Length: 280
Image (tube, rainbow, N blue to C red; front, side, top):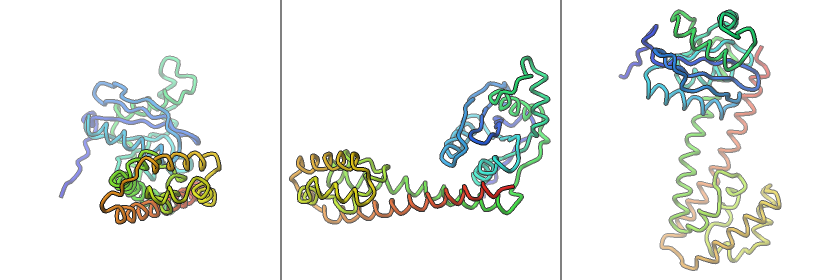
């Protein structure tokens, strides 16, 4: 069984300071030994943006060694960030805001509050000391958030694979349609379960395809443009590829599943927002 060993003190290769705020957080990823700043950036306080940050943290760990992440607030606006970092298995500690303020004020120009400067100050505090309190799941709402974001991450990973299979399947029997539609867009996905083969699209024509998309909630300008693109692709392919019927069946299945998963991810996002609103 693989066991992760966390080093302490200066031997931890990457230190990450996060200055927490309501709408966005500021992040500084720093090499522990040299103090070199690898990343200094703002990230929005939403699941997708935090997922991107987690990917960056994992890459920094892969490139430079194990990392420790510190936040300056507990609970409240830090709850989503905390839950997602803990769910990702990232070593998280708390550097109190009072400590950060005092350390910043001791530096040149530190009298003025600055999110980027505070993020780097938090990372520097990790370089100086290793006895910061580790952050764990400490209340029911944070635990619920952690479960919600874990499920959300699973669905996002599965969705990425599903959409890749959909593109691959479309390219196998109707490459023109694979190029014409953007399967990451819900409006385009709405097309595939109903019209997916060249013959179906040619028979339906622009008016029926547009009406189908409008009924599915796609706005008219986009629906009409998508109908034109798919009809043009269908007119250029008169050949029926062997196995088309079965591949078309699979494409419809992938698209239908993808639509349902998008809906579920939206529900999870609403539940996450509700937890954040309830958090004391």
